[in-house]
Figure (cartoon, rainbow, N blue to C red):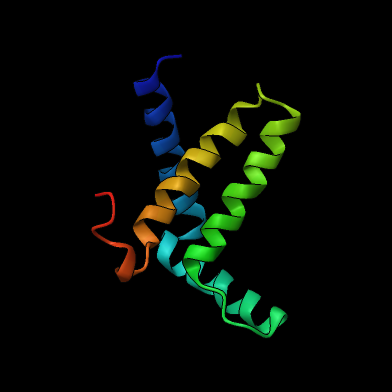
Length: 93
C-alpha cells in the first residue's frame, strides 16, 4: 500500500465512523466531559485525542502489522490538529 492509499483508507474510516458516531468535535467533547467528571479535573477534547492516539501507539508496539491501529493512529493525530488549542496555532504551521 502506498502513502496516498493509506491516507485515503484512513479518510474513509472517518466517514464510516462519523456516520455511526457523529462528528469528531461532538464526540470528543462528550468524551472529555465524561472523563472530566470521572477524574475530577478538566480534560479537553484535545487530551482525549492524545490519549486515544497513545492507545493506538501502544497497540502498534505489540503488533506492528495491525493495519487498523495504524489507520486509527493517523486519524487521531489529524483530530489532534483539528482540536488544537488556539494558543498552539501558528507554531510550526
